[in-house]
Length: 345
Image (cartoon, rainbow, N blue to C red; front, side, top):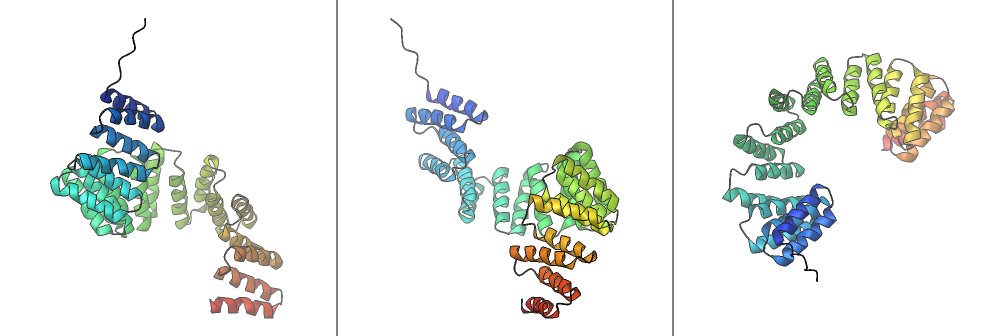
């Protein structure tokens, strides 16, 4: 006669759930946590872990129920309150989330993660100065908290405080000089300050570390464009096209750069590629129409403007360019209607 195996304990089910969660098998992990909670309904770690697994599945309401259940059992469980706040934040209930974070901070004013999460939530509410105050609290506890430095830098950027944002990225780079995103962000702030040469130097540093980061190539190309170095800008555009040939924005930008060089036929091909990828790319239709105008192909200009106006009937450039094309064709009454439409809007 064969003996039956020993039943798993709640702790063993919880450990198994953790292992499955690390493999991204969240549904199976939840089943393990449920087994643990059948054995021990007051098992705090199992409630937290089940909530986290549900959160990873985007089931925020169900996750919230887990954290609330744990709070009923253990009202002072900090993990339950912070995770409840996170779930509420994910549900767009930002004010309620802040109440959870504040509850933790009252008991533990040195809880860096809570200050950080509070800062993120305040940022979502557009309360940028209060958000920065939270990140400063985090950095008072841990001066090298990278996420807080990034978030503070991004928030300062939102406030147009570009030089202060640079100081955040410099602090990151002091400790981790090979952080490609910090170099990228610093480059963006220098770009915003009109220091395009210095921005390019930062983008180059970023690309040395991560040569496949398309956003860096994109912004480097824009910086070259600002300096009138159009051939260098085109090289950046082409690099992105190697990685991502279906990127409508880069085809559009390359078209604009070629346009600035007076290479209209090449620019036209780029706008055609943009439109092939995204037929509703309004400005590609507008710019294509402008090129037709430069080539005295005014009927084709009108066709492009009409396409643009199908996408946005109130687009002023569409009406203005169509009006100019009609004037060049001697259709003055129709042109007047286009110009009147702009004045009316």
